[in-house]
Image (cartoon, rainbow, N blue to C red):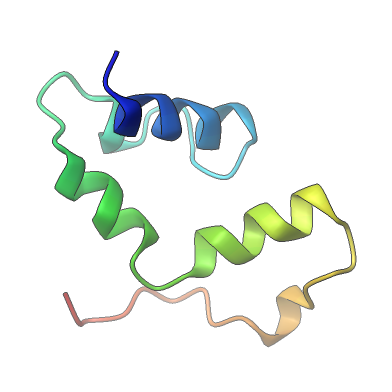
Length: 68
């Protein structure tokens, strides 16, 4: 399995991405994972999951950004 797919699976296992996210679709490409990670929100959620309280989730803008 490609490393980016392993990373996507790990993010799902850690409950940062939903199990039906497009990164696990058969047609997915590495760009789909890059798009999911681009604004840093998932990384903040992961840090919060790994170390509760380390990130104040109230300070994060969860609305998707328009930039690509």
